[in-house]
Length: 352
Image (cartoon, rainbow, N blue to C red; front, side, top):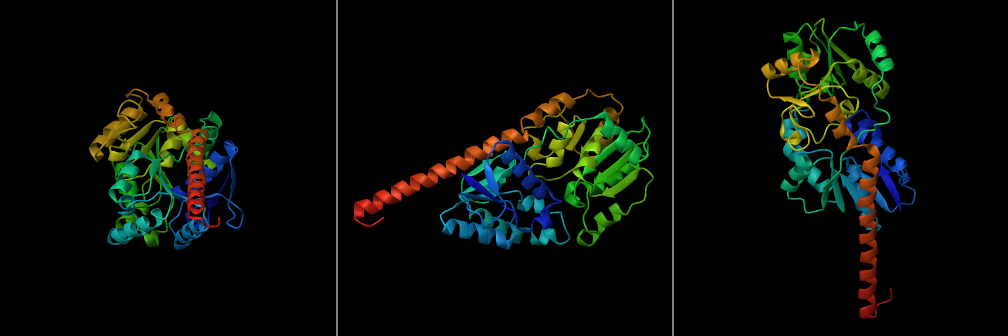
């Protein structure tokens, strides 16, 4: 069995969650000794598609026409497309129809969480849908005092300075407006947002937020995995203010790094993140302020070990095993279809 991880136009998504998911899939397959290729001209049995470009849909249709099995990975929904880029709310219904066309072309749809699975089922898609986490590399994302020291030195932070970080694109859905507002309200703490989006593509409100000048607010832009690992090690709180997600890879990374986590209390996190058990949750600016103070000043109980347990369940090696199981089911189904078709032809006297 050989899998084609379809990676056309990877440059367009490599700095997004989709790009991270593709790199995770490569790692997951390698860790489980599963053969894969990124060259569409190679021979393969299954194509695993992560993007929704026109070429992605074309690849799906061509593969099925050749008798190959197609796995379509559903990272996007109409819900998380809204409040992203300029004009996204107007385009959202059209984007949903395009997503349905792409996803329905696969033999199997994989999506990261039960929440996103439920959303897709609500679209009326009839393909089998399973949820498999994007996973996290626990061997890479490990807390280390050297990383902390490097991070603190780079950003000229004292050992006793309290630092709150977040990671994501500059889009309203990610909660960047609230992040900047909290930085204004809490000047005693340093707020750092990692990630980048071309400001020409975002709303006026988001552009104004990113251009806010405060002594305790930093926007370093997109950084490498290594620098991000340093930031997780060197900060006091990971603040995830997103309004909508299909999972949140950076959240899994923060949990793996045993950094305290505070998230917005939204539907996606109802089933697997529990307030005051493995993370803290809040709903509005006032609640976030109270929680931030309690966490960074060690007034609240530490939940990092319980949070790490959540990350362990999504270790990238386990994700590889789950992907292999689904791949093998598709191959078995393909072989059964072949046998049934052969039997039909024999019964009718046709030459097979």
